[in-house]
Structures are given as structure tokens and as C-alpha cells.
Amino acid sequence: MRSDEPKDWRFKLHELIYESNTPAGKAFDVGLLIAIFSSIIVVMLDSVESIHLKYGKLFNITEWIFAALFTVEYILRLVSIRKPIKYVFSPLGIIDLVALLPSYLSIFFIGAQSLLVFRALRLLRVFRIFKLGHFLTEINFLTTALKNSVRKISIFLLTVLTITVILGSIMYLVEKRENGFSNIPESIYWAIVTITTVGYGDISPITPLGKFVASVVMLIGYAIIAVPTGIITHDIAVATRQKKELPESCPSCSREGHDSDALFCKYCGSSLFR
Image (cartoon, rainbow, N blue to C red; front, side):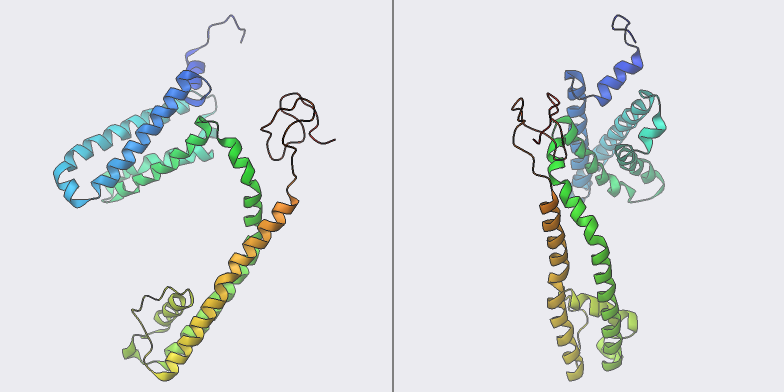
């Protein structure tokens, strides 16, 4: 499109809804955040019985106003782009849809309106609106460390699950049914609660042998708490050492604020490493 051609309505709508680098676009996004935050407050207040009895009808009307507003906003997002299906299946598109569905599910399912708190996920747009996205690049190595820890943590959890099944089964044999260990699943539940040091106390051993087994489970619980922390800490340390240290400023133009994985200056194009 030539610079002297008038912009069509779809382009203007896209610029308003998706672009936050214009005054109108930023005002739209800030207004959207305020509406999202306000709707979440309404849902929370409506869950308080004393407040619901007094203002339930007002909250219901307000909620449907917000639902209509967000529905129109979602439709405009689809209309203003050439390939709406890509937005629907994008991370932000999925969040927008998930945040919108509970309003209509509440018509058919009682209590579904409680899921409206999923709208809080839409507040993540604040990073894009206020240009805070570059801060997220500074912690990319944390994501790498967690990914590297998944396999080790999975093996650890499988080991712990095996231990709890064995100890729960032993406790089922040791304790009597009248002491609360009426079946093996119930005994495994006790073992999980005990080994994680939660200790609800709804089921507890009575016999001396049962107390001995419980003591063993407690000691094992204290021993294994540090294992996942150590695994993740180690992988974070490794990822940190592997992270490429950038110079604070470009050697050529002295500008700062480069991404953590940058090789060249985004202002002058010069190499950041000499």
C-alpha cells in the first residue's frame, strides 16, 4: 500500500487493537486491562455470601456487561486480521477464549462463573503494553534449567511414588481397620501425606509397630525434600554458567538494552563481541 493511499478500516482496527506503540492503541489496551481487573474484582466479591445477598443482581448485570464487552473485543480481534485462525490458536488467543467461555458455560452449568478468574491470565498483556517484554528475556535460562530438570524430577517422583505404595501397603498390614487404615488406597494416601510432611492427622497409627513405620516414613520425608531443590538448583547453576555474558553497551555506538541472546547491536548492527 502506498503512503498516499488511505488506510482501510481493517488496518486501522488492527492498529488500534494489536499495536500498543500508538496513543490510541495504548489507551485501548490500558482500558482493557482496567476492565479485566474490574471484572475479576466483581467475581471475587460475588463469591462472598453476605455481599452476594445484597448486590447479587447488580453483580450479575455487571458481569454480563463485561462478557458482552469482551466478546465484542474478541470478535474484533478476529475481524481485524487476515488469518484469524492463527490468532485463535496462538497463546494469547487461547487465553482470551478460555477467559471468555466461563461466562456462557454458566448458563448451562451452575458454578461455572467461578472460572471467570481465568481472566487474570489476560493481565499478562501488561508486559507487551508497557514494553516490559525485554525483562523476560533475562530469565530465559531459568526455562532452560527447568526443562533440563524434567527427566530427573520425573524419575525422582516415580521413585517416591513407589516408596509410598510400599510403605502404605505395609501400614495396611500392620494397623487394624478400625484405626483408619481400611484399605490400601487409604493407607497410600496416609503415606503420601506423611512423607510430604503435610500431616493432616485424619489418620494416624495406634500400634507400636505402626508408629515405628510412621517414624521411618517421616525421616524419609525429611530426606527427600531437598532432592528436587538440589536438582533444579544444579541445572540453574549450569544454565547460568552457559549463559553468554553480554557487554553492558555496544563497543561501537555505546547503546545499551540488548537481548540476552543478541550477537549484534540492534541500533547500529555492529558485533557485540570483538
